[in-house]
Length: 263
Ligand SMILES: [Zn+2]
Image (cartoon, rainbow, N blue to C red):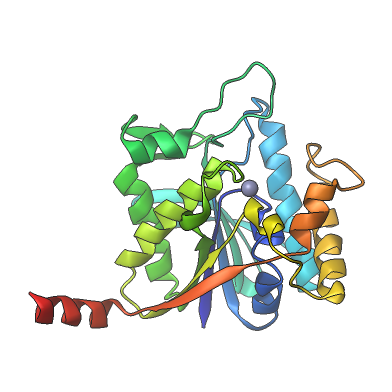
């Protein structure tokens, strides 16, 4: 079984998609794709590279220690930066599309994914200068990764819950792009749609034990991200205590047969 996670930023999988992610890592082959660089508009590459270090540190905690190896992952004609551990059983892929928002005063948000989706721009370049993505190119890249990994479970941001004023536009558009991609993924698969910031409108739904675990993992990440204050704000504490997702089955072959019968 191979599971794919598509995360907008280098921490959304820890906050919104865990403890599901933590459980998967104990049993399964997992590939997590980070769509944006998570630069938050910060022009210094050291910031987003630090977040990548943070996510590796967090996964190392979940894996009980890991030695990471840099590798290049080929998908849809692009060479994507990746890190693998546990003999390739766990892989982190960084597309490094510019972050849509800006936490830096005076700098406008790039809204890169939104502009790409809306057709306002033809393509965007990754922050490492390695690749460019058109709207279709990004969908194709994500679909190719799902296909190459023979993903049987695909976990993404739920595009139904944003942007409603209480979620990050990157969560929403990463969800939209990943949702389109999984429609091209022909292998029958389970789709999990995770809610973002709006989870804090819902009751706590994970055990105290898992809350402690998620906080411990997130602390390993936050050590590398100066934008996360310490101690964690009530917002972070609230998000870490929750994880909500919808699940549905996708069987492209069956859908095609149904479409033919209907035509
Ligand atoms: Zn995020």
